[in-house]
Image: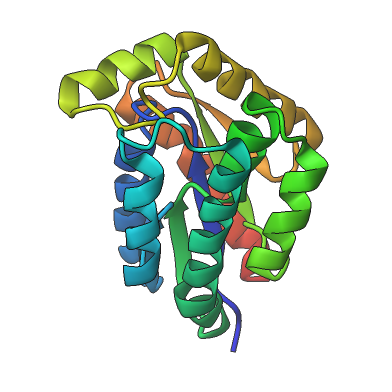
Length: 211
């Protein structure tokens, strides 16, 4: 049996990730492809409990290493319980965030270093990586404004604008490091135009995948 594709979305909260993920799910489902959609941190019961700890606004004293390990623990459970079995059974997985978030949030913005975060997450994921990642490129101030208009901000969203700019710049570094995997999508050109770009990449990936 052919393994499923692993597709992830990255970017600031409010960048349009969730909207594009939903559109892509519909697009691939209409092609007859079996899909499961997930979010990080979370996705399964244990990981959702860890998510509540990570994002709780009361946990302002959280150490960056603690934060990194909690994200990795949540991810390890999600991979073992859902992502790996789904891919092995030919189901395509679309996930809102994955290891790239830890690379930029903890590795770069928190200053723990990419090597440290990679080592921890390689253990957590068993070296599973996405086939393609879409970075929704939206100015962090605009993204946060969108996010704050829709819900109460969580602990990470309440960080300083400097932190969010460091995260954004971290994503730009990742694009240079992994240009074959990470595709930059303009998140400020409108939903339909952004999804048109995503479809082009997905159609090309499907052509190669089905060969």
